[in-house]
Length: 119
Image 1 (spheres, rainbow, N blue to C red):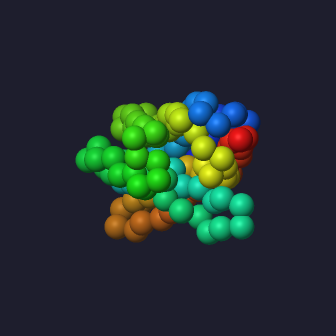
Image 2 (image 1 turned 60 degrees about the vertical axis):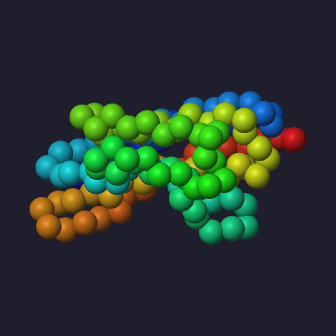
Image 3 (image 1 turned 90 degrees about the vertical axis):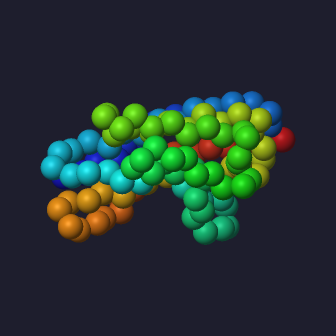
């Protein structure tokens, strides 16, 4: 069984920083893409930052230069360091793991953590 557990988040003023962490637990599978998505109020979920199995990071243009995603492959953990936060970064942030069981691929999601940036 795969579990995706996030931590971090909270309330911060504009210009501040927050860190999010995520751990994928379980055994018998391989995690390919691992990263972060968010759902702003009234909008659909969107990709924030993802690290591929080969370690290549990909960022949405809106966070590039402000957010840093880091992945520890051996532990199946990923973190998101967020700086220079803006009110438009307010959202529920979700950790996503793309998991391979043999030849089958599945998406697993964390429960989500709220990030609120006040102006």
